[in-house]
Image (tube, rainbow, N blue to C red; front, side, top):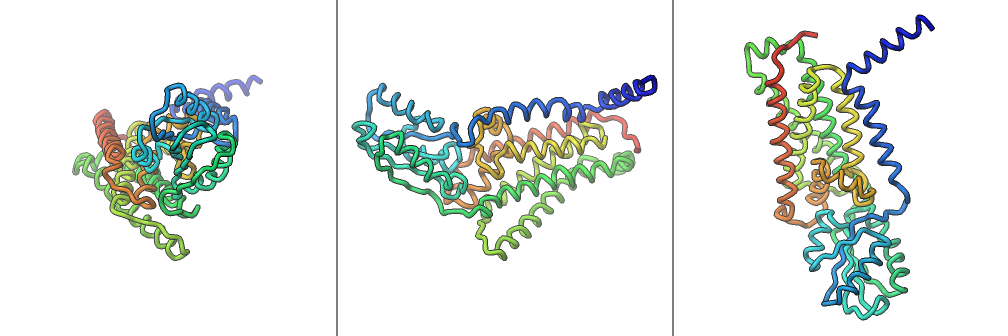
Length: 348
């Protein structure tokens, strides 16, 4: 034991000197514990649903309707159908229930709208209709799918592109920056480091666009139909930009230490999970739904799905595009501030 104790103390000291390792060891277990303990049911019970009531009803009746809807969803009372359908396109709601000619719960017309391009939502629509009929006493319900149906591989395509963009930003940009650590004093003396980093991020965006073209070609060759509008290209460029700025900024934050890569890898896993790249955020517990809304990657996923599979105007998503632009601008300012803080460049 006399020889073992100093070795144990040494290992603990080494860990305590590495902020990224402490983050991985202490913060992430707490996070994942909170996340997975919140899953109390395999069936989504907190999915955002819009309720549209056609006509005037007493407040007490409206309250009863919302109470019933809350037994199988998280309902939001929306004033009119066009606004609710816009929310459906923006993934603010996953189902819209329009109530017409209401006399009683079992004497009314119910029309259910859902996005058929959101494959996981479409797959549970029949279950939802059965559940509604049980809750509403067997009343007949009319079903209205919105947008063209997307197969599961097609639904995954935007998520695949964003994962590739994350690899470019978190791996390629950070790796190239770390590799230049020994040459940074010369670069700083004979050229502009901000210009060097700008060129690196520009190349990263071009590499991502090439990857997108190659991935689309593979999809086409295998018979899958995936749209690729100019709106989708703009979202992909902005997404690669802010992800590359995160990769660069993390290296600067950790002062060119290799454990910056460990942090980025764990951050990538977290973002892929919480941003709903491959599974709708509306099927998550409420706490995770709120967490997703503060990540720019969530809005990137919604925008890519919308511009690839939905007949929508870019004007509908002005607020989401502004979020991506502001995220990129904020990260650029943070990266520049981190660069200015570093005064000494040491060779490894």
